[in-house]
Structures are given as structure tokens and as C-alpha cells.
Amino acid sequence: MKVLKVILQICFLHVFLLLGAVLKYFIPLPIPASMFGLFLLFAALCCGVIKLEWVDQGAKWLMAELLLFFIPSAVGIINYEEIFSIQGLEIVGLIVLSTIIVMGLTAWTAEKVSAAKKGESH
Amino acid sequence: MIIVLFTVITYLVYVVSKMLYKKMNLALFHPLLLAPILLIAIISIMHVSANDYMQGSKFLSHMLAPATVAFAVPIYKNLPIIKKYMKTIVISITTGTLMAMISTFLLSKLIHLSDDFIVSILPRSITTPIAMEVSKEIGGLPTLTTVFVIITGIVGGIVGPNVLKWLSIKTPIAKGLALGMGAHGVGTNKALEYGKQESVFSSLAMIFAALFTLVWGSLIKSFI
Image (tube, one colour):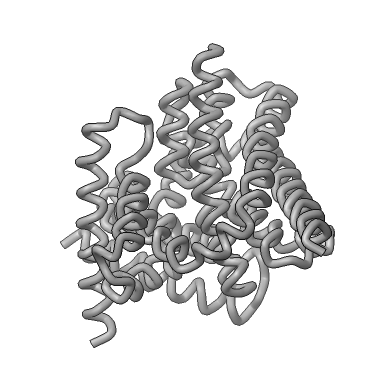
């Protein structure tokens, strides 16, 4: 029963994906259809056009299993021989270093700003 | 037939990898690292090329699009929190997206990457569909960008928790924003393990990072 509900809700989410594609056709911005779909679903939820229960379970499942959807492209990495060379190792090193910098600075900034905000309100 | 076969195999390998990861609790067993390695082994035994496999498992990669739409749900549910922390979110993600592009650019120069690679690697820290758009916009190769996005996901899922530990980051907002900013959907998936608030902030970081990077992308484009 629960599986059926999740499947139905994922189908329903596709309606918004489709609407997003329509919107993208009319608004020539470099934003993918799925992002337009996200905005439309958000607006529909806010206006009460659709109820949270209609999408909640399906959305939860998709977000929990997100890694699954990356796996086929991850297998495709073997098509890029360059990755499996010295240069590839350097690129991975670059990504490790840059990710540490990005995450570190983002976390640090967030803590500083939210701490400053707390100070203000006291 | 092929589609059913590869979808089922991928799903099973994914479930097994996830179980192993939970049991071993080792970064090297991260499902996005372990599952592709197992699958590469399986398809080479079956004498199937990576392209045929990707064609066969297209259904799964396609689900990334409705999954992106689904992120509207946590945003809607947490609207009051978002309003409350708007300033922190905007400042942190502005810092994060700029640092992602600047550090990636400088390090690419340091290791003498070709220009094609540099523009393709710049949007690596955001979610796949939008990274591909940005890449197209600034003259990169979208498929190559996907590769860098995936590597960033794998790396972020592994180093992310350590960075948070090293810096002794305590607040859910900082943890969530850092994970979503640094490693898009994979970071957000990791944030689920920390808690509900972390996961909300991480979803937000992912969305904001994608949008901000689109803006930086079009700015870069007007400079080239």
C-alpha cells in the first residue's frame, strides 16, 4: 500500500516537472525544467492548490534514495581515461582541497553570522 | 528488457552497498564509491560497455529531475525557519559559491588544466542538472562537468563530516549549509544522518548554491 502511494506521488511530481518544462519554454533563462518545477510545486503548496499529503511520501522517498540516481553517471566516469592518470589524481586532489575550503568557510561563516544575530536580539 | 535488468541490478548493488556502508561505517564504503566500483566489475564480466549500461539505467538517472522538484517539500515545510535565518543563508551561500569557483579556478591553474577542463570544472559543487546548464553557458563540456560533480559528491560525502569535526562546528545551520553547499545532493543526503534541521538547511544550501552559481556563471560569461 505504501509503495503504491509513493509511486503515485512520484507520478504526480512528474506533472510539475512537465509544467516546469512548459514554463522553461516561455521563459528563456538558463534554468533547468526541474528547477522551474520546484518553484511551481512550492507555489502550489503555498497557495494551497495542492495538499502536502499528496506529495510528501513520494518526495521523502526520492530525497532519501538520491544517491541511487547518481550511480549510473558515476559508472560513466570510466569513459574518461584522463581521470585515471596523474592529471586525474591532481584533479581529485584539487576537488578534495577546494571542497575542504568551501565547506569549512561556509560552516564558519554560518556560525559567525548566526552567532552575531543571536547577540543582536539579546 | 535491458532496462529492467540494469535498473534491477543497479538497485540491488545500491542496497547492498548501503548496508555494507552502515555496517562497516568506513568512508571508503560510501555507496557512491562502492556501488559504481561493483557495477563496473559486473558490467565488465558481462562484457557490457559503460555507455550501454548508462543507456540501460537511464530510468534511474532520470529520477534526478523529479527528485529536484521534490526539494520544494522541505522548503515549504520549513518556511518559518527559512524566514528566520534568511540573512545567514544568503551570506553563507554567497561566500560558499564564490569560494567554490575561485578556489577551483586557482587550483586548476596551479595544476595546468586545459581551458576546456577549467570551464567544465568551475560549477562542480552544485547539483548536476544546473551544473550542466552553467557549464554550457560558460562554454564547458556538460558531460565532463557531470564527472566533476560526481567526484565532488563522493569527496564531499567522505571529507565533509571530517571538516565539520575539525572545525568543531556545532550548530545545525552551519553543518547543513556546509554540506549542501560543498557537496550538493550527496551532502544533503549525508545531512539526513545528522538530523532534520541539518537536512533542511542542506536542501536550502543546495538550491541557493545552484541559483547563485547560475548568476555568477552569466556574469563570467559577460566577461569572456
